[in-house]
Length: 283
Ligand code: NDP
Image 1 (spheres, rainbow, N blue to C red):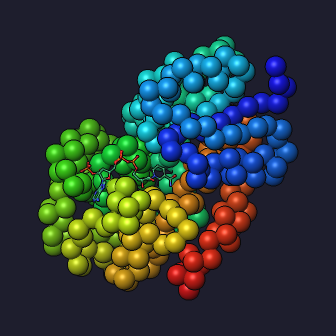
Image 2: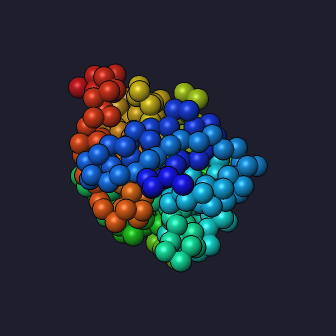
């Protein structure tokens, strides 16, 4: 039995995950002694592998694509934000042996937008592109910031309409297909589709972004994503990718596990310094 506290990220594929690096930097900064590994876990193996991990003394897991819904089911109980999002990205062993499920994606995004980039959500007209797991996770935390309105647009319009209906109680939110965006304008456009991962862009009408508007792609890479480029071409004041969200959601998970809040700025700065093509693009 090892004495060091063990954590891991489960996902499939997982080879390019930055999470071990991020948590390693957090641990070093806060002088916490722990091990954090990335493990390739296909969906059909998730529950056995999680069982084994915790049975062998593991303290906490992050779960990424395609495991967040399975992690939600696996948890013995969930935080309210995880309950609403129907997806769990953080599992934490509790003192009584139960497994708590949380979702830190939404708070990670809001912290990156509001705290790191001073982007105003309150009173803003916000568009969320996509109606998958990531969109579901970010809706409640965004609506908590009291935007003027929130529109969800998705390739499969029906999914956006259903998702919006689930959040009616949380604020002004409607769902539509991309064709429902004609002649609308938004102060902030969030791309929560996975289109960027294959270099694609949802079909967006011209004039969609208001003057002084901002764009944010939840996806990230070593080069600007197609949506980040679209934002800059459409005169966004800021057009950002989701690396900051990744670090902020990791910091929330670290806090849940260790009770210590790491400083995220040095970690974001370090990871950005390793992406010279992004820095060049922002000039
Ligand atoms: P899902 O597979 O659950 O959903 C994918 C969504 O993208 C669906 O709405 C789908 O539409 C839409 N979509 C896929 N391809 C296209 C396309 N070519 N054109 C238009 N729409 C498309 O994925 P997730 O919600 O889990 O993830 C979405 C994105 O968010 C990913 O890029 C992921 O990397 C990123 N993410 C980033 C995080 C971070 O920390 N930075 C955290 C979580 C997610 P349809 O319903 O019609 O199929």
